[in-house]
Amino acid sequence: MSTRAVRNKARIRDALVAGVCLFAAPALAADARPDWLPEGSLGTGLPMLADPGGLRAALWERGFKYQLNYLGDLFHNQSGGIRAGTAYSSRLELVVDGDLEKAAGWSGAAVHANAYQINGSGPTRSFVGNLMPISDIEALPATRLYEAWMEQKFADGKLAVRAGQLGADTEFIVSNYAALVINGTFGWPAITTNDLPSGGPAYPLATPAVRLGFYPTDKLSVLVGLFNGDPAGRSNPDPQVANRYGLNFRVSDPAFMISEVQYKYGDDKSPEGLSGTAKLGAWSHFGKFSDQRYDVDGQSLALGAGEALQRRGNRGVYGVVDQQVYRLADDPAKGVGVFARLAGAPSDRNLVDFYADAGVLVTGMIPNRPDDAVSAGVAYARISRATVGLDQDMITVSGIPGPVRSSEILLEATYSAQIAPGWTLQPNVQYVVRPGGGAPDPYDPTRTLRNAAVFGLRTTLKF
Image (cartoon, rainbow, N blue to C red; front, top):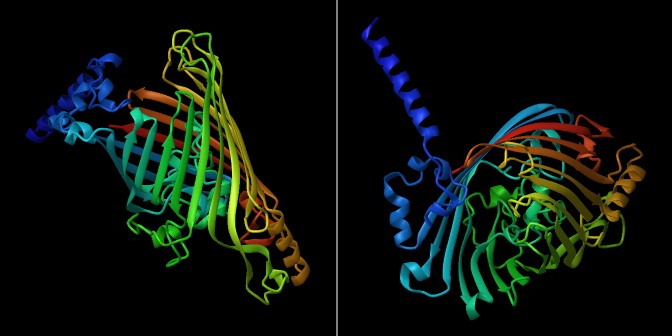
């Protein structure tokens, strides 16, 4: 055997031994996890990866903690939509949190920042053409800052003021039980994505803002956020190009304001108890919005004779419910939970005027797989009456038959399998009814896009 072959054989042997040792290492007990190690990190099950070089422990001594999260999505549009095809996208996230009381003796103060390295392309733009993005990490390739803020707490934590660059989707209109489903609408819903300038202050575009939090009891919370109303501006028709790096820090656009009341009820501690959360919110935007059907002279925009009538301001209301319906006796945090959301906005100035979603999350119920989870959801986005009217006007004026948009429906099911603590694989299937709300097929504008069947696999690594 040649010297090179012997060396290669030795390298393979050493790699196999290292791999066996790596996965055979004892996991950290939950109560033994050090404060500097993020919950759910790979280092929980593989202690040799917890703190390479001692950097984490050293930073935590100074009040700071970091985490790296990697998500990779492989999706294939089997049929329908714009065309069949496969897309891979990934997102590497760096999160840094700082306790300023520990770092500098500043009581009640904290800082937070997170940034993304986004690569590849998702299936929505190129293959499906739907309103509700197939993946919640879909975005144009870029390295971008998302949030960067400082928070100060007062009155023993009952009052908190947060200021800096904020995303509204991290705290507002959020369902905790919808966290596992992958489609982007279960995070920041399709009604705000399609009705607000540049999609609103939500992934991947945050914006300068101030958020006030009031927590009078353990069960009641009141949140009010005042955001710059356009995170990207109009320098490019694509908002993600206009604010490619998340560094525009726009502050002169008409404001976007959102407020939400949250109430937790039920028993979240005893095995026989069931808990839930109800949220009621409203938002207002103080800018101008183009009428979806009429021009400044009251004529249909289908005539092409004038500019769209400008409506002053925009607004919407919403409600969210998370309800646990079954709880495991040995782990009250696991069991079966359901979620539902409703939202509405004026028809005359918005593409989507009504939105609803609902779903179920099942955790800890699979024998011998206590950390696996199953989730399913359905979402509905209705095209506004004004937009439908314009589609009908276009057919009447042109004399050419074509689609009249109505609504888009999404069905999703997913299963998250834990390979090791901090590493999951997640098969996913989605079915989109009337992509784009029944938008025209670009290859044959006389018919609508066909229903799309999309299959995917997500891998998630937390370090």
